[in-house]
Image (cartoon, rainbow, N blue to C red; front, side, top):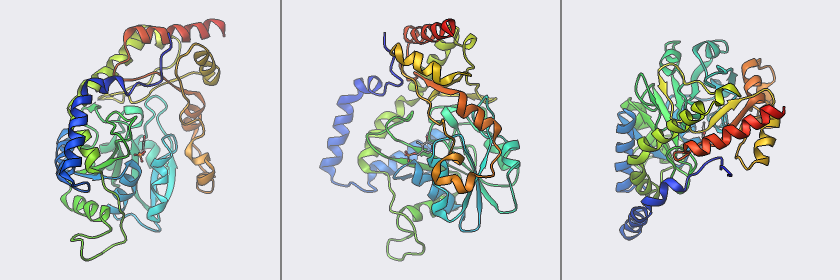
Length: 363
Ligand SMILES: *Cc1c(COP(=O)(O)O)cnc(C)c1O
């Protein structure tokens, strides 16, 4: 039995009639930019996260750049960011004029820690991007206790719960992506910024509309980056499903553990106090590429997402040259994502584990 790397269509099947209905409503209503669905979804999503304000933007990458700008990040500043994450986490920094400074991660949680951040902080550090990687949670409060604001990149962590609340409500400001494959995905690009700070929220709203508070006077060079009305209408149908889908992702993780996967590879560890809605289920193995080949031969989806960490990507080569990131190098070399979705069942998990066992036996 083949098992795909992810399954975004099965969970949507039963919702199709309602989704088509709300899309038709938007078409008939005719308000496509910053309409009633965007306002409503901003409030509903912020409330879900336990944040006071939500501001819809064009995508999760713009969300990061705009969040940094709203914190006052600009030329001459440094922003600390992990190298082991999706490229956009770091790519969002240079457009502000600031310089990315790469930090290491905890290899068990894949997230930054106060120690890895502190190791690279300088007097020029203006902000930290802490990524909730793979649905796990970065210790946002503990990092802010170092005296620097955190932009929580929660693009992969919608649906996760944590001892201090939910991603999006943990620190100064947080960002989300509604790219179709994320835990809460729309039918195109979309993003959101959440914050509890009313002044920061005002600046974000200004920046997403060309740097203008009143659409008459242009105070700043901003962005044209909004969540579409059509996407907002779709996401309002999907948000009430998120907790159920998150439980499905947790159950999939349990199916793997119960089938004995932990005896064969290193399993991802939830951060202390976190109950992750695994976005990707990423295991580690010394011979990750060989394991990938063996799984591929058996029809099991797998992918090494970040084999070349960001500080060694061509575009960042000048910035990452001096970086000493031993845990990043280790997890970049050994990680492998295996099938994960809201609907991955015990039989599929057993099939994946049998394939890993077959590889281990032949190795
Ligand atoms: C997907 C993702 C982004 C970017 O989101 P887009 O909507 O694709 O721009 C940023 N950071 C992380 C960690 C992501 O996974």
